[in-house]
Each structure stands twice: as C-alpha cells, then as structure tokens.
Image 1 (cartoon, rainbow, N blue to C red):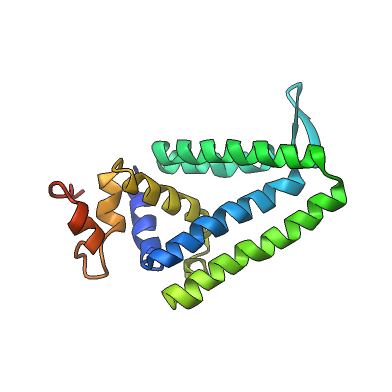
Image 2: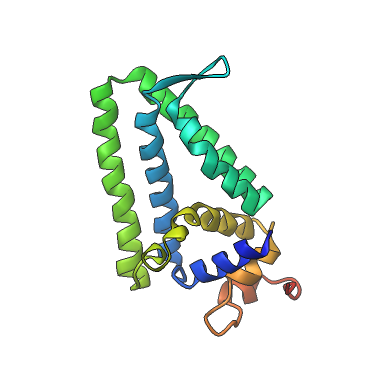
Length: 184
C-alpha cells in the first residue's frame, strides 16, 4: 500500500467514524455503481475485435486506479465489479431500454439517499468529497478495507481505520485485538 493511499484513507476515515454511516455507504456505493453501469451496458462497442459494452470500458480506468492504490483491495473491488457487470448485463438482456432507465433513475436516487442519510443522520458531518473531491473514488476502497479488516485480513489498514481522532484504538479494535497493531 503506498503512502498516498494511506494519507488519503486516514483523511477519509475522519468523515466516516459512525458504523451506521459505514453501512449506509456500503449500500449506497453498490447501488450507485450498479446504477452507473446499467445504462452503459445498453451501448455496444467493439474493442480489438471483442464485442463488449461501454460499461467496462469506462470503468477500466478507475478499476486500474484502485489496483494501483492497493492490489489486494483493488482485486476485491474488481471481483465485486465483475459480479455487478454480470447482473447489469442480465438486466439489459431481459428488459427494454425504457425499463433499464426506469430502474436506473430510482437506483441513483436511493444510492444518493443512502449517502446523505449516512452523513446527515449518523455522522452529522458533510461528506468528505465536499472538502476533497478526490474522495469520491475512495469510498469503494474504504468499504472494501473495512470488509478486509472484519475478516481479519488487513491489520495494517485497521491501524489507520480503527482509531478515533486522538489515535486511540476503537472499542472494536480493543475487543478483537490479538496483539499490537503494526505501526508504519
């Protein structure tokens, strides 16, 4: 994990301390990603002799960015993205264009609502991307990092994510910690 990602993640965490806000972000990010790729799957393209749609072509740069930030988290996000691409392809092949858009628009509204409720109700703070627009791309990395931590896979990320503003371990860390977390 590079130093840039660590700094960005530490800054992002300051806006996402409440676990309910985190849960709202999981739902919101998945919903918004699916809503973004769904209509893009309506646009067929051919790249290097391979028939595909606009969805993976436009998602590729951000997927590469996430892989460059952290290979393990980026690979996990890629796996989730493949599943969402498959689901979007299924919907597009079984629904009319009008139906795809009638699914997409409410999904966008619901995804944004999850984000707004998470910040307004649970975090009581404006979203991180208001202060730093690059944080728009950190949400999926943050959510995936929290999943890895919950599975006991990334103690290095736990050292960044599971501290309170005074750098004291959170109650989750204290209760589940086997040994001291490594400091970088």
